[in-house]
Image (tube, rainbow, N blue to C red; front, side, top):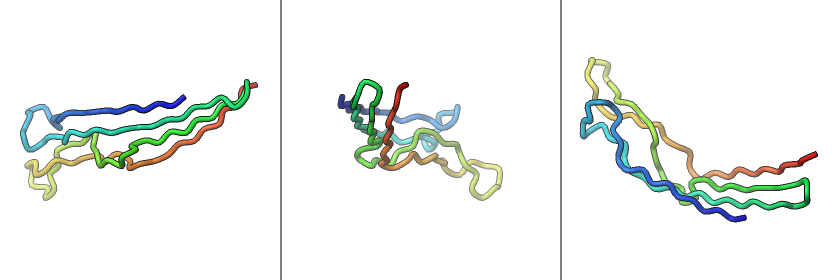
Length: 92
């Protein structure tokens, strides 16, 4: 089996007041997967996540970078770049 999947996320606010300067940017990411049954009891899979190596963020929080008590900038949690997972499964 071959799978190709995509995920789009529009803009999302980082906090409840919906400040325009505290928004996660939109993104589109693509994943590709290969699954094969090698024998009755052996299967293998290979997953390539973030196929296009998109820089994207799915979470974050407002930051006070100078510790003066007011929010200065959005802080983002960066998601992984392109990466590969391989798996072999034996069933007994």
